[in-house]
Length: 147
Ligand code: ATP
Image 1 (cartoon, rainbow, N blue to C red):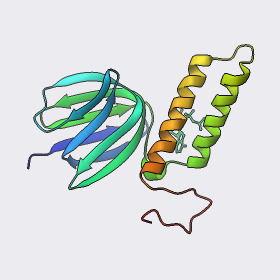
Image 2 (cartoon, protein in one colour):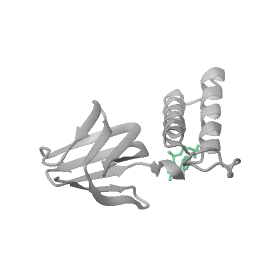
Image 3 (cartoon, rainbow, N blue to C red):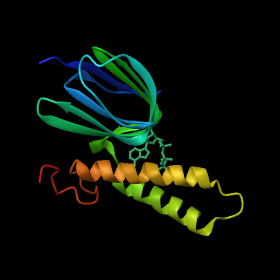
């Protein structure tokens, strides 16, 4: 079966490099499924979940927006911020979510509401990705992610 070469990079690092069967990305205009031999395109990504399918498995990444370049044989994701599901610190994401919710509730003078909404979306996506991939809270390390 044909595969696609996928690279997921941020300004700081390369998170993923490998051959995959399919990529599902959070395009600005909606979710996009990319299979091998897809038409070339360059588009923007919004914050969301990036799914990578290969060999019957699915890996999840949290993406904070960015760019997507598709060529028939490869896909490059240049993300503003991105984490593999098992790298996500759920406690940190929950704190970020609480901070954003408090900001939206209290609306202090000078508060940047757009930024608070974006922070809330980023936090919710991180929590969703980490939970969906079965990663448990760090304060309970005795629970294995495979359970
Ligand atoms: P916080 O307020 O917790 O910093 P944020 O949404 O403002 O969250 P970003 O600006 O999107 O954070 O990301 C800054 C860096 O921190 C990026 O490298 C990102 O991958 C990483 N990061 C942010 N939140 C988490 C998290 N919950 N777990 C792991 N890495 C994270």
